[in-house]
Image (cartoon, rainbow, N blue to C red; front, top):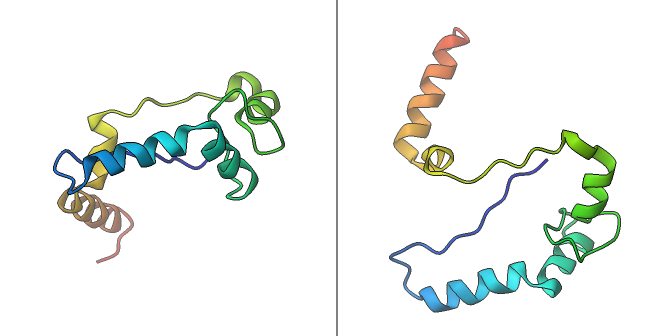
Length: 96
């Protein structure tokens, strides 16, 4: 499953435009395009079809376990923390 999220940074140059974009992404039309053209599962329950969240949940049943977005998950977006993680990963694999 592909993880995706959208947010508007608190210091965005055009926060209202960002909010409108997120609203569109989550709208019925935006989620229909997401499912039909981007082939990503829609998160809305009123979208149907092979790439809908409804179809995904029906296929996987109780194996679907959404993970809430938290600051812990966002820590990986910090470039310094990411580089440190990659350095530790390479070290654990015996690579420099």
